[in-house]
Image 1: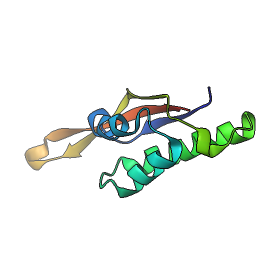
Image 2: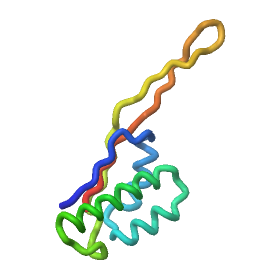
Image 3: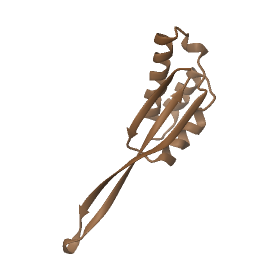
Image 4: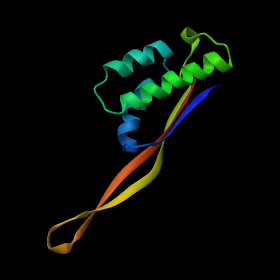
Length: 106
């Protein structure tokens, strides 16, 4: 098994899982076509990870890219970047920027 791991991707876990659920268990070429045509912002970092996992498989295991299948794809919650935004009357408003960790195994 060869994997690619993307950490601290600034995106909500639910938005990334919406895309990951569509590609789990599919072949490599079919996955690339699906990710190119989906309209979500989460598709680009996942596309890069799938491409990276395939490159890892071809260089480390000498496997052909047409035989690859996404056997495991998971999204875990990462750290939340917290910032304070100044508001009226000297108050501050917290801004929470969620991140996620994505693992693709081929």
